Length: 174
Image (cartoon, rainbow, N blue to C red; front, side, top):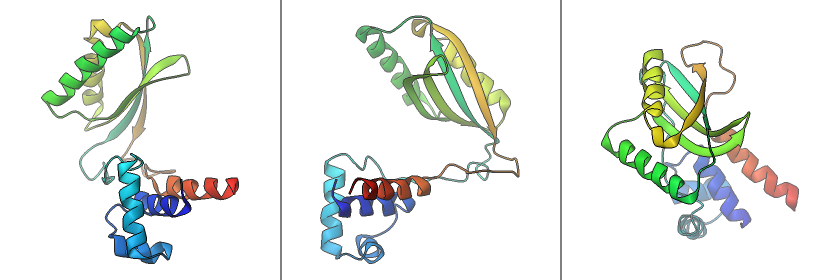
């Protein structure tokens, strides 16, 4: 990735509302150069979407949950596709408080989900919803709950620090 691309990406991670003219000023480049870089980043898939991170507490959410899943068996390709189809169909039916759901590994689990909830009962409903899919053969579910109302916050969800990391990692390689 080019240095200009990293700079553009980093600034957009901090504020995706910036115009190309504003971006050019921030990274000390020309507006046409920034426009070409942004278009390249979009075309190559480095930018998947433009969005914002709301203050979930102000939207009425009291908790954020990181839920870990353990499947009883490894999935073959057919089972993975079936699970994706079930989940995508379900997500399309209505609003879900799920921010992310992915396979992975660690701590003895092989999938993770991040979600926000109005209350603990909402989290339990989502957990029970997940358990109804016998095709997924869930063996274990564990929730790590973050109290969004707690006055003590260490580092709320943001991409600003990651934006800095993108630039500093590139500098280390040079």
